[in-house]
Length: 142
Image (tube, rainbow, N blue to C red):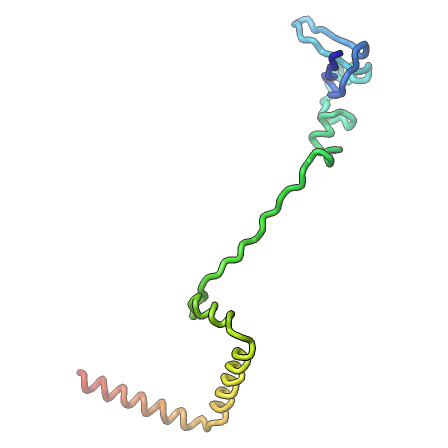
């Protein structure tokens, strides 16, 4: 008992059913029904007829049970250095205990507040003096 396939629709044809047409050049066509035969004779494209197997395959209809779920790639974590901080510095800060980090943060904040409290003119005087020393050093070297 051999099942044949309809040349137009793609459906299986049971033995004793369907219609066979042989063209003058010897090409054999097997059709499931007169509907398939007429559509073939009118030169309709089976990929554009909604009820054919070719159309359903092209538009991915009724394939849910056969397909497997597509795997998604897991993102890889990658550690690298950032400008101004090497990887070892970053890892050391990450592995530090939260209490130590908190103490360091508070100390840095205290230092910034102390710098703000100082009179600004002192800083300018120091800068001017440093510049003068640098100029003197240049004169000596020349």
